Image 1 (tube, rainbow, N blue to C red):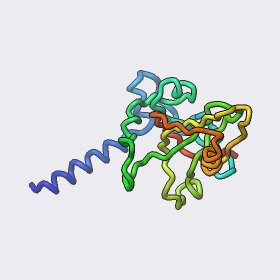
Image 2 (image 1 turned 90 degrees about the horizontal axis):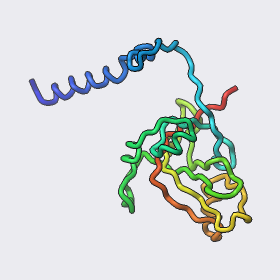
Image 3 (image 1 turned 180 degrees about the vertical axis):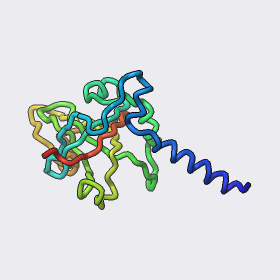
Length: 180
């Protein structure tokens, strides 16, 4: 039996294992009654992207407190996705930046990319649902205003109004269609 043939069989087995269990099969893990096929509820949050409001859900966070606040899974292994810094030019990563404002009146996060259009026809090659959290901090919170795009953050930084701090928090926050 050739090495390539053996690898292709192992790959097929792994793929079938990933997709062979329906939602109803998972009940045995927790000794609870099986779930009905259908929909679940997740908190939906609003964020800014290029001056427009977009919607996202948070499913996993590498920081326990933030996971609790976002009602998401605590997933410390997401930190393994962070490349060594400084990241050499040309090194690609699945992580995109997401910005949270640490002080001031702003509640919404700022995304630098979203799928466009949202859904299976997206043509945006920059978008990833995995985000590395950056904190935007107003130097003087009394001068704070709402930042609605990555460009607005960089403009405020250039004017000395804010600083940008990279964290080691990775979040899985897919952008989703707004509900009707």
